[in-house]
Amino acid sequence: MTLQDILTLDCTQCAVPASSKKRILEQICRLAAEKIGSCNASDLLESILNREKMGSTGIGNGIAIPHGRLSNTDKAMAVLLTTEKAIDFDAIDNKAVDIFICLFVPQNSTQEHLNTLQSIAQLFSDRKTAKQVRKCTDNQQLFNFIQQNH
Image 1: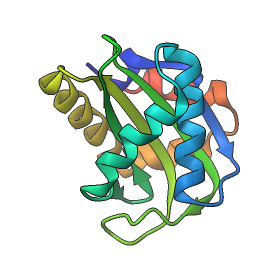
Image 2: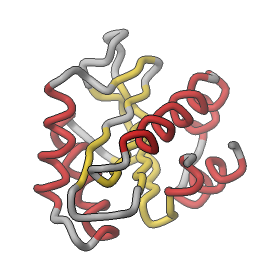
Image 3: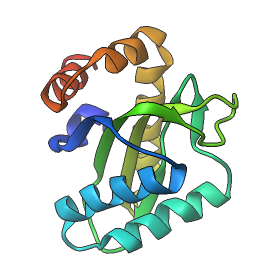
Image 4: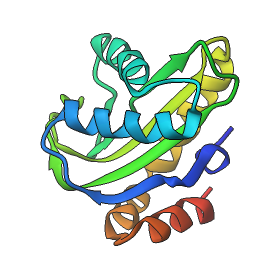
């Protein structure tokens, strides 16, 4: 499964104001909770924070892929946000992060989860992709860019 398969326009936001790692994760979880319905934002946040305790999901180059597993859904979904200013996220390269691709997957979809994470990391391993994402000025433009770049 790719990012294009699980990202929707209503879960894509461009140039979001954010002041901290916790605030951006809370915002991501509020968006996802509206979409998922069977989970509330605090359950989603707990899922992501549990994963972050094992090590930051900041993969470098200003990109983070926070992710969590959910027991009460059978469908994967993604949230994509860019922030106005990069924020400290404890990334592996110690650089601030301004592109967040958050993934929520069903608890028992381990292989699908890993494959989706790998496809997202691969998409963003090309520095040109991150550069183009940063140039997007609105939600629709950002969503369209992702849909056209598999």
